[in-house]
Amino acid sequence: MSHDNYELPSIYTRKPEQNGQYDSEDEEEEINLGNVMSSDAALTTKRSTFRDVHLEDNRLAWLLLATSLSILIMTAVPVLCDIPNISPWFTGDALFRFFDPIITLPLNLFIITRADIMTSGRSNYWGPLSEASVVWLLWSFGAALFVQFHGVHTASALFKHPIQDFNLAHPELVVQYPVLHEIYSNMRDLWEHYIAHYLYAGGAMIMSWVQLFAFRNQLHGPLPTVTKIVWIIGSIVYGLLLSAVAIQFPDGLIVGLVYTVVIGSICIAMILLNPKNLKRGGLLTMGRRMVIQFYLGACILGLFVIIIWIAKFGLLNRNAAIAGDSGVLPTAIHVLPANPP
Image (tube, rainbow, N blue to C red; front, side, top):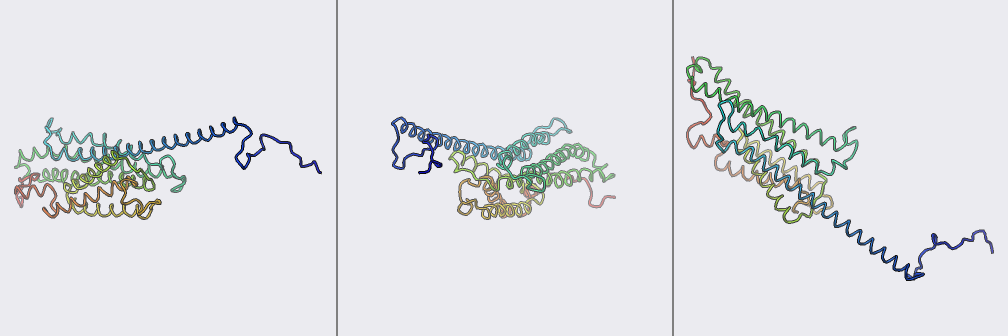
């Protein structure tokens, strides 16, 4: 018998018996205790992960609601409410708008930080830029556009009123110097209502598009009941915001129709073409594709409200519809003759 391959018994190499027998009761108890502890640890970890996931989903739902509600308030209050003026140079509605980006921009920022790709995205996603860097770059562009032209809009709204007051007080000078009316008209229509309105709204839209991109692969839930309610209310508020902006802006109804149809279709495509192992990509679930479904629901509601408005008032925006009912153009200055000398 060869002794070259002989190996002494060792506790480090001995394998458990296949029949489940143990050398002592202490060893059996120790193994059973280890199994129980491992099971308890796994259960605790699972419960902790469950709580963490639902906590993050709940925070995201509240952020979506708070952001939508704050933008709606900042947009609707100056239009619908008569805020007292401090002076002709400091009108109440324009001063109220000063707080818009101070409140809404950080909320938009907090939403982006909830995306998983901001901490675990791919590197070298776009050339040398990581996936997170691309998101920050695109979001920053939208934020800069939003803030820049929000300032232009507020400045135009502030400065047009003294010119309007002067023109109304001195119609003979307006007839003599038509440039006075042109200054007011360009400030109100060109800069405030068209350039600033659409570009600062465009900045807000870009930030929302970046959210769709950032959350395109992220799954949520199943959401608890309270989180679902908050999430649904937020989507409704954002849908009302889309329709309100479309109704208020010049030519906004056409833009609103196109926007809600296009973005809604993109949201559906993002879900169906990237199903993430969910039936129909989770399209009919309550928040498994939380951010994408949020904007999809808002687009559907916004489109519905816009269609109702068009059915009643045609393509007239809110100011034109009010003027049509009263027979007076509330923002026009009737001081110029048809053919000034």
